[in-house]
Length: 101
Image 1 (cartoon, rainbow, N blue to C red):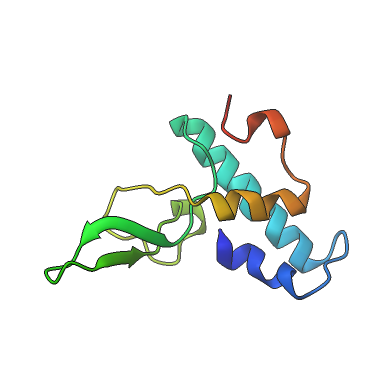
Image 2 (image 1 turned 90 degrees about the vertical axis):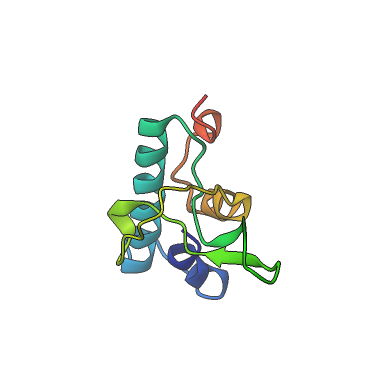
């Protein structure tokens, strides 16, 4: 999700623009996916607990199938809180449903 929301960190987005629609669509897709699996939304690239042979943590591009250009063979999911918090600035959320409560 970070890649979809990152431009808004330095670019102003007006309602109805391509950037605004892109951000809102990405958040909506994440929320729909998370609701289906009953998990929090905010899935994005992140370090994960998989260690390399020399003991370093891996960095992996986690995501959802609807937004992915490449679907990895991995079925692991990591919720990155920074992605969830970044999506709050889009306004396309229900505060009570952030964690699909």
